[in-house]
Structures are given as structure tokens and as C-alpha cells.
Length: 371
Image 1 (cartoon, rainbow, N blue to C red):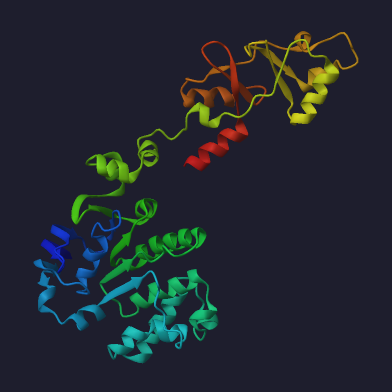
Image 2 (cartoon, rainbow, N blue to C red):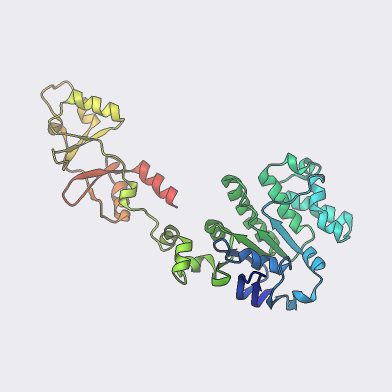
């Protein structure tokens, strides 16, 4: 569909923006260009519709060199979505979407039907939004209009230049999902530029990682995660993403651990009740003066025996509860926690010193946040 052959771009100040780039973008795929600032990703994309001309090499669309095509006609046959959206404020939403078909002198009846279909496709009811103006829409709604405007003349190729980066996180995530769903239906060839690796991994069929004007690695998100080509790709993807991709989905026990509420064994029951209430817990971990684990005293046992003034925590604590070493595998800790009678497990070091506890609430919170 789109083929780059030895494409280079050198500016007048001798800056080499692209260096002998070779790429093939397949028909109907969502192809993401990503890399650090100045890597050449936007330059690469803008060469497809000749907003930037090549210095050397050639680009082909369906086997035809773009150098042989009129740039204006070429651009009208390629959809283009930018970060700033670029809606014309004096035009209604339907007029903005219909702009390119109108410039191409298509049949108004046909293209207005397309406009309404596209608005419905992205959840903008035409009855409600068609006659509104851009300033009457939220940022996310305006960007949806920007996307469907690029689709209105039914181009085979759509270029998207960091279209969601200016949006708030919630709108951005929703639009990413909308784009994936929309692509399943329309099956266009989309070239998408982003600097956000999470965005690339979420939406791309294939990802092209660039550095200093060169292609470093091009592959599916799955293969890039599992087989980064070199240290640059590894660093760019990030250790956390790679760790999760390779099956290490759980954080270390130390990351799931929360503070242990401890008590010395000679503490009386009235003192213990006050300690329980102050810390809003239902058990106390009993430790010696070196903070070494001795056992657990439950609130139930303390309250049940409260009237006996001669008893201490030592008399009520139970020693059969499971503990776990800080260096244990997290997967084992989760299995043990799932079967823990008290709903938590004390975490100890090699010297039996209590470091904290893991419980169901904090473990679920940390794991789901990590994912």
C-alpha cells in the first residue's frame, strides 16, 4: 500500500531528519510511528501527503510514486487529522465534516448522507450536533469531528499526527478505544504518530520505533514487547511494560506490603482494645523487643476475654498463623493470602523480624494499578 524506498530528508542547515528509511505499510493496517522528539516520525508521516518533500529516495502508494502526482489532489485523497483539530469556527459541525467532499465537488446529497452516518458512528447524534458550532463541543467531541472529517471523502489512507495528545486522560483513553472500534469497521490504512508508548501498544497493528531519523524496529506490539531489538528499544518501552509482557505481572511483596500494627506480649487487654480502635484493625501482631514475630491476637479473642484483668496479649495470641518471607515469590504470597484465615499475612525477614503485612485490599489495589 505505502512503500518507502531509501527515503532521506536533509534540511538547508545540513540536519539529516531522515536517513535512508525503508518501510512498507500494509493496506488496512493501523501503523504507528513512535520515538523521542526529533526522531523523524512526523517528518516520515508528512512525506506521505507531500507536506514535506523528500531529499532523496521515493515513496509509492499502490505502486505509484507520489512524485508523479499533483500534491493538492494527493492530499484531498488522503485524510489528515492533527492535534490542533483545525475545525473552522464559522462552520457548523456538518459543514466542517463535509468540507473535503465539497471541495472535490462530490454529490451533496450523497456526501451529506455520509456525514450523518459518520456522526452516528462516533456517537454524535446528527439531530443534536449537526448544526452546532465547534465552540459548543467539548475537546473530545471536537476531536471526533476531526477524525470523521478525515473520513468523509472515503480516503484509502488517513494520517493522524498525535491527534489525542492535547486531551485529558479520560477523553484520550475513550478516543483510543473509539479509534480501534472504528478501524474494525472501516478498515482504512492509518498512519498514526504518537510519543506515548501505551497509546501505541493499545491501538497499533504494527509499531515502528524510530531514533535520530532511522527505523530501529518495526513489528507487532506483541513481538516488540517480547523481543525488543536493542537497549534503546528496551529503554523506550520501559522496564515495567516489558516485565508485565513477559509474564511477571505481579509486583514484589515489598510493594504490596502495608504497615503492621504490632503489640508487645505483656500488654493488657484494655490497652489492646484502645490500640485496636486507634488503628482500626481487627488483630494485633505480637512481637518481642527486637520486633521478632511471636504470634497474632485477634480482636474477637481480646473482647471475649476482656473482663479478665489478669490476662495479657501473650495469653491470647496464637502462633499457628502463616507468615511469609519478604523474598518469597509474589505468586506464592497470593496463594497463601487467599487461604489466610485472618485475611492478612505478616511479612518477615530472614531473622523473623516483622516488616509489615500483606492483605487482600492492598494487594488487589497494587496489582490492578500495576496492570
